Amino acid sequence: MESKKSLPMRLLFLLCLVGLSVSESHCSGNLTVHPGTIKVLKGSKGLFNVTLCHNNTGSVVIHFQSSAEDVLTVEDNITIPQGEVGQPYPVEFHAKDAGITNIQMSSTQVDVSSEFVLVSSMENEALDTIAVIIGWIYFVAWSVSFYPQVYLNFRRRSVVGLSFDFLSYNFTGFLAYGIFNVGLYWIDEIKEEYTKQHKYSVIPVQLNDVVFTIHAFFITCVTIFQTFIYERGGQKVTTVCWILQSIAWMFVTVTLIITAVSSQSVLTWLEFVTFISYIKLGVTLIKYVPQVWMNFKRKSTDGWSIGNVLLDFTGGSYSILQMILISYNYNDWSSFFLDPTKFGLGLFSICFDIVFILQHYVWYKEQEPPGTENNDQEHLINSDAKDQ
Ligand SMILES: *[C@@H]1O[C@H](CO)[C@@H](O)[C@H](O)[C@H]1NC(C)=O
Ligand SMILES: *[C@@H]1O[C@H](CO)[C@@H](O)[C@H](O)[C@H]1NC(C)=O
Ligand SMILES: *[C@@H]1O[C@H](CO)[C@@H](O)[C@H](O)[C@H]1NC(C)=O
Ligand SMILES: *[C@@H]1O[C@H](CO)[C@@H](O)[C@H](O)[C@H]1NC(C)=O
Image (tube, rainbow, N blue to C red; front, side, top):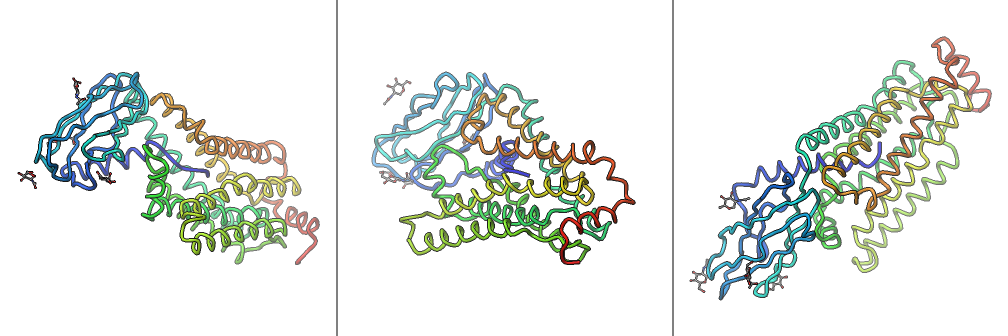
């Protein structure tokens, strides 16, 4: 259930935005480019428009520079005559090969250095569609993956066998990830900081990330609520888990206070939400351990939903498959190198899912039949010997 930065969904979302705003390109700043993000097939030519926003005393020459000449070439310059304010001028480029390129601009007459066009040139259109479909499959698999556990708890009227530490880490993890996503998606101040620091790149959080995280947080709360109303067999959140989470939230509180009072000189809000996202990384590294341990101690996976594991495994594999497809199609393997945590964490969760699958179907198979629930409970109560 890790970082859901789906490129196809992002592109789809961008396409929708482009579709909505294609009719009118309103001017802001010194110069407006439209569209700012373009997807083309390799070997094809494309156009974008530049529009001057302020009246100029003379004609304006704007130079264009491709970040990778072997992948994409662009017209050297265009000249906008005096008085042609608000008039779109087409600029032609040629995508020679697959790759992600940005077209940068410069001019001696006006400062246009902050403007750029991001061109994604792909090998194959069918692959691009497949990547979008895979993106939806793993989005759905991951979102639905929370429900089998909720249903299992409801059916058994019991949460015995479900690690409370795991739930508790999930609560912290999704809350932290939610703050990061909402910050980068909705808070203008944070978005501006991001754009300033990461020139020529698109903000990595899209609506589907926000929706996923809010939903995941909500359903985690529902599961935690179930632990209060159903049979819990003396289980509780361990001291280690409380300590780790207290440290995490103390860290958040301290950085929040520093950010709020330091008037952005020590810590910016972008750095604040980035720090919070590290909590999510930390949580992902440890959250499955208590559940693996609990299954091991009980020699049973009874109470731990295998449906959840299978869906999580599906989501994780498809997200990695999609990363590979997109990287191949856009000949851009930088996401593996620039963002190794995303790939690494995906792989990490998959490994844990495999352990759970082995525990459920191979190692503790005999203990599974329904009638053994009471034995399991006794077993657990004996080993914990508390609260009953
Ligand atoms: C517009 O141009 C002026 C000077 O030419 C510059 O100071 C300003 O930063 C530019 N604005 C943008 C958005 O690039
Ligand atoms: C560029 O502007 C022209 C004239 O307004 C318009 O017909 C065309 O669709 C625009 N092209 C793009 C790629 O926005
Ligand atoms: C604009 O481009 C043309 C052809 O690409 C070139 O001959 C000319 O020197 C350029 N003008 C400027 C001002 O750089
Ligand atoms: C821009 O300036 C020129 C002369 O400098 C003038 O003729 C023209 O009307 C102006 N256009 C706009 C839109 O202000």
